[in-house]
Image (cartoon, rainbow, N blue to C red; front, side):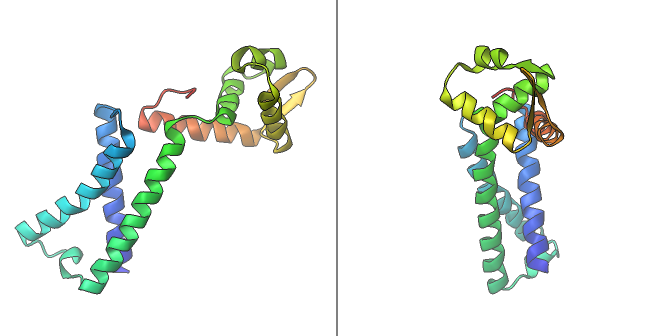
Length: 167
C-alpha cells in the first residue's frame, strides 16, 4: 500500500508541476517537457528527503519496494504522456463535435464549408450519428447528450491545459 500511495503522490506532484508550468507558458515541445518534468520531479523529492532527513514513507522503502515504485511510476507517467499527446492535437472527429457544439445546430453545408467536402467528412458524420454523438434532424445536425458530454469534457481539458479550442 505504501508503494501505491507513494506512486500516486509522485504522479500527482508531477502533474501539478506540469499544470503550473503550463499556466505560466506552454512549451513548444510539450512531450519533451513532460518527459523532463516526470523524470525530475521524483529525483527532486528523493533529493529533498535525503538532504533533510525527513522521516516520510519514501525514506524507509526497501530496495524491492523502490523498484516496484519506480516501475509503477514510470509506466503511469509514460501512459499519461502518450495520452496527453491525444489532446495536444485535436482529431477531426472531435473538431466536428466541437464545431456542432459551438453552433448548437448546423447544416451539412455548414460542415462542408468548415471541413471541406469528401468521403472522409461524410463517413465521420455517419459514424458520429451511428454512435449517437450527433443527431441528424432533417437537414440539420445537433449534439446528442453523449456528444454534448464529450464536448464539455474536452473543452474542460482544453481550459485546464490552456489549449485553444478547435485544435
